Image (cartoon, rainbow, N blue to C red; front, side, top):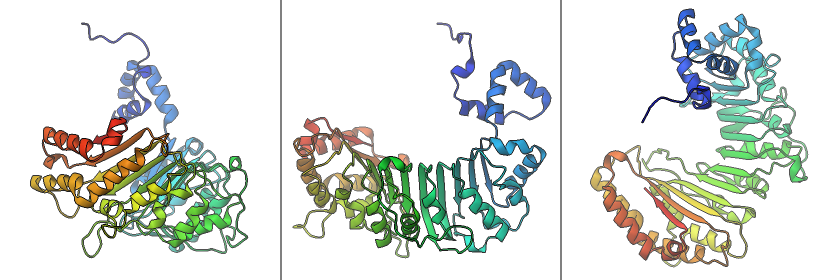
Length: 426
């Protein structure tokens, strides 16, 4: 069999991302570029067309200085930028004038997606930014054509401008502390927004965590109450403010994801318990897809009740959905990795046994099998997926896992297994 590829345009086979990676790794001298262009001229054209559509840099960092140099040399490149990913490293100076050479809102006319992330070890304190930089960032964030906005680990920022963006489709707020400001953005203490027709609000996806004040501000400042179709909630530091705001944002949600990111506290335990508001699925009348992203320790809060006579939180909430629901799929992702205590193979064997056969777990799995297996109550349900993420270096033999899963399906969740709805991934 010949291994020769058919003649034609290679770019019809290779994705643009791979082409860009190949071109990025080639030396930037004229002779080498000539040889590259001989491989396929359309590579050069397509790559040149995509250059500077996305830029990533740290405020005041070396790549920020390099980007500033390029933009000052060729100002027309400002107009090519569509996505800006801005990070902050506390080791870099925010007083550097090169930052204002990159963040020029009047020049960045085609920017549609922006992310600003604070330092991984400390938040970005908005109030301490130099006035010129703070004003430039506010002007950039308030662009009316923005479709995607990500703000992470930022304190003392007035987020009221977000509520008036009618074209925003994706919004992520994590670790964002809202503080009302008198200058760059309009006051958010006006009358609460009213529920208008769903089609008049563009926001499709909302991801939130540790941002109660910001969500309340968004609700108050919005000309239209956002009604996203996709909602992702980080359960860490979920509080009453987040709960109150999300109740208003939930009536059109079709995809709901609960994320419990493992966090280390003073006791060395992993993750906080799940608050009841996070699990209130009844307030999601259009819910079709439900996903949990958990650590094994957090699964205990989901599947174990306070006593043997009280059902687990998940069982209670699924039972409440019986009268009417649109559920089509449920996914429970369970991570067995522990950043604090590396597991041995014997530890993993115990954990796997714990997962499939622990008394409270097995009891809840069986009740869920009865509830979700009711074809009249959950007539649209097509898939229940349980996924175990096991560290590869200590994973039990596949044959052993296959055997455990087979027993689990046959004895603990036989109804869903018989309906070919249950899937266990490991």
